[in-house]
Structure formats: structure tokens, C-alpha cells
Image (cartoon, rainbow, N blue to C red; front, top):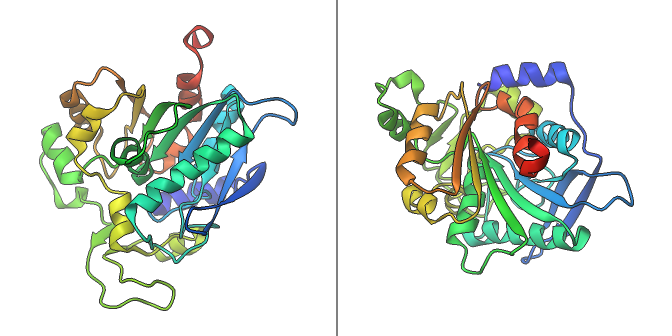
Length: 300
């Protein structure tokens, strides 16, 4: 999965944001984000906050997706590095609590509201980033800002591979299990992290180095980016939601996701598919996401 992504990413070259912004989280940690926005003095009416997947950062295809969305519909796209990832500060893979990670979303929403006071906001995430957003929407103890108007989940980590395979009616084969990650207990904490990791990501060495990937998660970081009770959470959604499954997803089979959404029977959720695989879909989904963001009369 990562080998093919790295090959394509190296061929394309690294995508750089128009500029980077930072904020100080409620616990004092500095968080960074890259962004694409309209030319100066042209106000934004729509802002997308796009969250990366587990172990990743804005440079792992997410800036490419943000650039393409902006180019196709003009929306401002903000791509945060989750605390302890990429440029954002904090011990790698560590969170002081899951609610702090969800609260960081509110910090970015507040920053967006200050920078673009007339804009509607869409929360969007890929893989575990989709769960970070979903957890904030459904598990947060405080109301979500009324400026947040929609939610988009791309190749989302809504359930385990075995669960989705069972729901899709396919036989569960060992080779279909996600080999890039394995749950394990690591005894002791290292010098950079105050707690032991409970999840170790078995990323290929070349990909981990080239993409600056985080090697493991502590319990609270893992919980922040994992589904709570997915059926209840999907049923609880009230925001207009687009679930965009990757047709060639190696981790989360498209038919399993389709059935999961059908079982939720929630009229606010629209299900669709996008070509390519779990990571490579980031290079190709921009126009499709942009179309979903456009007002109906413009898209027509």
C-alpha cells in the first residue's frame, strides 16, 4: 500500500501549501496547518478543514488533495497536522487525553472563524482522520460551532477490516487484514513520549522515512482516532454527510462500507465511491469532493 503511494508521490513531487498557519492549543501545544486560499483581499465563503490519517501528516497526499479541491471550487482548505504529527508540536503519537485531540478541532474552527468570518465550514477527514472528526461531532461534550455545515469522510476507518468484510458478505482471507498496523503493548515509554505506545504501525522503512510517519500511538491517541460505537455514531449524525469510499481500498472494502451506511438508515448520509486505493485516492478525489462542496445550482 505505502510502496505504491511513495512511488507515485515521488513521481509527482512534494506539494507545498500556499502558506502555513499556527495556533496554540488550549494546553499550550503549538499546532500547524498548511492551507490553500483565494488570492489576497478575496474573502472565503467556504472553508474545509481536512484531517490526515493515522501516523501521517499534511505532506502524505493531503496537501495534494487540498490543492485540487481549491483549484476546482475555490474553497479555502486548511490541513492541520494533528498534535505529535508532522510540524505540530508534542511528543510523537501521544495525546494527554482523547478529548484534547477532539478539542483541537474546535481550536482550528475558532481560528477559521477569526480568519474567514463569513465562511461556512466543512469538516473532512481521511481514514482515521474521518473518525477524529466523527468523534468530535458525536462525542464532544460541548455543542459544535453552528458555522460547521457539513462533514465528509474519505476512505473512512469506520470499522475493522474483518467487520467490513463480514458485512460485505466476502470471505475473510488473512491477506486482506491490514498488515501496516498491529495492536501490541510496548513496555515502557521512550525519551520522547511520557507513556508507552499500545499501537505499533509497521510502516515500510522507506515510506516511514520519506513521509515522516509516526511509528506508534499511546492509548489516548489511539482512542481519539478510533470509532467509539460506529452504528450509534452514524445514526446520531445530523450534519449533511458524504461518505466517499475508495473502490480499491486495501483496508476497508467498499461493499462493507456501503452496507454499514445502508444499515445506519440515516437520510443525512450520502454514500458514493471514488477510484483508486486507500492512499492513492488522495491524488484523484479532489474534483469529486469539490463538486460535492458546490451549491446544488452551481454543480448542476
